[in-house]
Each structure stands twice: as C-alpha cells, then as structure tokens.
Length: 376
Image (cartoon, rainbow, N blue to C red; front, side, top):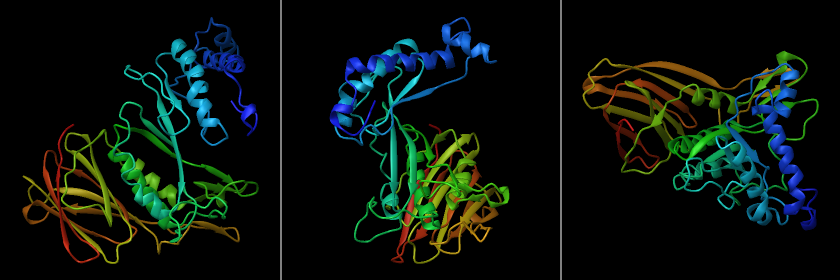
C-alpha cells in the first residue's frame, strides 16, 4: 500500500499485516459460510449464500510510484498472495504491474495473473497487434484498462502525458483498439479478457476523457462512443477457441483472427487500417459447395476523425452497421470487399476446411493467405 509518493511512505512488511487481515476479512464477507464472523454479517444484511468470486487483484498500478515496483516485487504482492491463496486456493490472484516481476503459484495448478493497462495513440495500438504473441501462458494477462486517448503524432509513437487527451474517441482510434483486441483474441490462451477504461463519464463532472459511455441527467443525452460499437460487435461474436492460421503474408492493412464456437460455426474477425483502396477478400473453403451461407457484419464511419458527440444537447452517432448474407459462389468461394477503417465479422462458416484468403495490398500486389481451420 501507498500513503504517498515518497519512498518512506510505502508500508513495510510488518506494517502491511493489518491490511492483509482486512483483505481476508473482506473476502470472508464475500465467500465465507454464514456461521463465520463476516459471513454472519453478510447473512444479517440479507444475503446468506456466499457470492461467486473468481479473480482478486492485489493493488493497482503498483509500478507507477517511486520505489513502487521494487517493494511490490520484494514483499507487498507476496504478503497478500500467500495469505489469500492459503485461505482461498481456488481464487485467481492478479498482480497489478502488468509484467512478471511479481508472480505467485508458478508450476502449480493455479498461478497468478497480471493486470496490463495501456493508453495509446492509434498507430501505437496497431503496432501492438502482436504484443501477446510471446506472453506467458502460465501467468496470464488481464487487459484491465485500454483506450486510445490521443491522435497520431508522427514525431512520436507513444502518448505524451503532458499534452491534452481527446474529448471523444475518433473512429480511427476505435479501429486501432479493435486491431489490438484482435491481437489479444489470437492469444486467448494467454489473455483472460479485456476492459475498456474508463467506462462512464458524467458530463457535468468528470476528470478523464475519452470514456466508453458519456451521459447527463437526461437519458436522451447518453452517448455511446464509437469504441462502444466496436466492442459490442466483437463481443457479440464470440467463440470457444481460436483456430490456427498460417500465412505467407504479413498482417496489414488487414488484421484478423478466427475461432470456433461449436461444430460447424466458425467466426472470422477483421479490421482494415491505413489502406489506400478497397480491400477485396476471396475466401475459399475446401469441400464447401456453392450456395453455403454466412453472415458479414461491417462497421464504418464517414472518416477516421468522426466521433460520437453531444452538440447543443443533440447526440450524434456516426457509426454505420451493415449486415449482408454471404453465399459461396463457384468452387465454394466467399467474396466480399472492405473499405479503409472497416471493422467486420463473418460467421457461420462450415467445419474443417482449408481457406485461401486473397486481398490486394496498397502496392497492388496480390497476397495469398492459407488458413486451416481445425479443432483445437
């Protein structure tokens, strides 16, 4: 714990003891039987049955302050981890530093995870599409906070924390977040999940922009950001496992991931970033006959700088969603085109098929991508 940003304001190991006990008391209130001290209090308040709880994070962004990461790795994480895991071994405990400097439960059936936070510009998010490709599969990552908060600055890729943040997330930022999300989905064995942050903004009193949803006391003035539309599309098209994809071409301007939710139901997700022309897709499935159906859902906006806003009391929503039924043509080929800054999902494709995916790059060359959909 911190009491300030001075090195001597970080609690020592012995000073942490009562705070560790407070954490155990809180967990007993949530998970303990009704005859336990704090479980009895929960029962008195009208909830005799324990709540369900799976994850507990120890701290928040403990790497940010002077001497924070050193003391967190040395003893602050382990003091809580050892006490909580001994009392509740079924809980997945999460470190707050977003890396592997403080871990617990290595080589056990229930290792700790870590909470990864990232606020970036569009180009940086796209560059991080492969961030989790080499992440730990034992100590998994939870992306607890992410958002595009500044526009691109070609003099520097990273965010400038001394500069203002965007008041509303632009569509190009939401597309870049989608690409970062697709990269996380490709590594579902290393990433637990992800959460945009902040979630809500009261336009009458706030400290941070942009936010996922902004509102006033008037319900008609609720603004769902462009990022909300992207998250809604990607989250509503889920699968149980990713499927392996092999390719002889690099990602870009198209980025994608594929997964399977049940036998016969595959989902393909993609986003287009910085393409100077329409991107035509031709997807062929081995053994698939002409006429097989699929569904293509596409999000786009008038341009990359378009934002959902509140102007003179009127909410604007610039995101357009188009749903099209795909039918396999001759040879079982699905064909469709996507424009720059499109975010799309295509689903309900047949089982166990090899795929050839073709699209034109900005240079006009034809890229061939061979995708093999298999059960994991």
